[in-house]
Image (cartoon, rainbow, N blue to C red; front, top):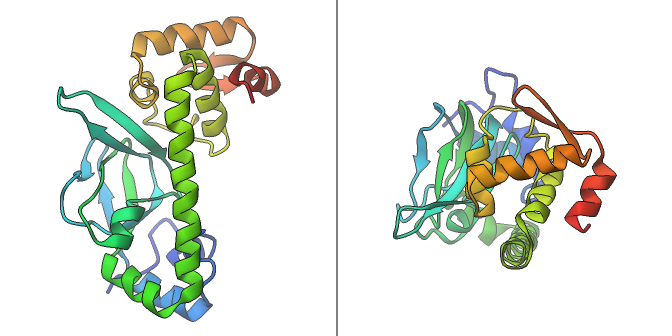
Length: 229
């Protein structure tokens, strides 16, 4: 059984209490679940788990950045999600107990908590509020994937990049390590060169500026207009 306090002061029970899946739980159930979690750390570039491997459980990030990705038959990587502190991943496998649907790797030094499928399965059977919360969150994720597919199929790279920058600025992942132009390109189904050209176009339009390796949005209204939002 793991200590549910991280050295950085991160308290897993508090994080669970604010997480969409677990905020319906009473404090005793939240603390019990936190005590069952395992805290693991990874170096930048290290694989957390691979697609098709046995269920690795549900993960909640304490510190760092991670990518959820799949690799096609030709070896091309497509990043499904870019994640930061407080985000969870591997939800589907954690709930159904089947193999991981995608791979996950650390983009920077990463610390995350793993909750087993068995612990979640027990909660699903004993707590109807948790089961309903899980259904609601999974439907939101499906809607998000549908929107992502629509963006890739119907929107230009400029629109996709503008939407990506607006989403990331809400986290805020842009000021953190690990989110490179190659990473953005793999997420938006384009090339790093195209991302560089589009970023400079957005800079010339006055929507953003660069501070060394950081991208700073200076005109969010203009960026939202470009994004069609």
